[in-house]
Image (cartoon, rainbow, N blue to C red; front, side, top):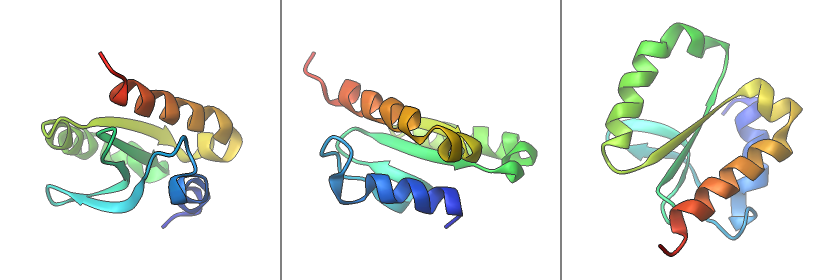
Length: 102
């Protein structure tokens, strides 16, 4: 787990974000998602510098995960370090939207 992942995990673990339960390092169709909320059908991925070189792989991976009906949110590590509050608000909004009554 990267330092950014560990920092975000401290904010997500134990249903701390709006009572949504997140799991870390969740396997989905052979891929490991950084964070996953089953109730919201939400995957949260953190991208480090190495991801600039893996954009094609990430796009293919995202398509496979999305085919399961899951929404993927991607954040660069730098946003976790500099504006974690905003990132958490975006994650919470996506989770609430996914679980809202129509």
